[in-house]
Length: 258
Image (spheres, rainbow, N blue to C red):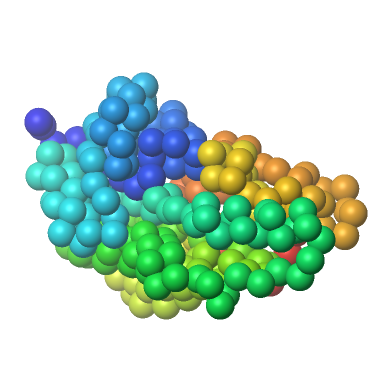
């Protein structure tokens, strides 16, 4: 495959939700898009729809992440934009919280939270983001330019009782973005992030209804569309954000601020 004269963007978690919307936006902006995902069929479907390339990889496996980024450099000779939209939740904990909310009793989950449930979210949401950011930085340093956008969560700021594994995994992404963002300022690489609130994705359908209401009755939008968050990501990858580094944009409709 010939090297690309168009900017190349890699989007992990690109086969659905925020990642898919981001792939479509970046393609419309003229990027050659590499869609990363764990479902081969869905990943290829999205890639074909944006005239991009599909790459199946599990971000919790650093070897697979490194191989994916190396393949992008081998095929296109450049990597300009990386978006870490891959993430997961804990459906079992959400189901427990939903039942406790329906019963009207106090929330109590932490004593029963298993090591597996804890590590799974850390492995995908935090470790996976670090692995992708690290590989992206390695790829971008020789060129002395690039933009990386992480996808954190409003849950890092508006923590949910009984759901510490998700909150901590996303708070870690916030800290990672701040730290690496400051480090990369002198190397021409911008690292920023977005912290969405509730977004209409498959993950939202698993959230307890008690977590979906308006905060304090304020008439802000309860849910965002994936395209709304993709627009923030598109801004952060663009030249319009050249003076922004190491920052998190909270895009949650006013549910929480920092």
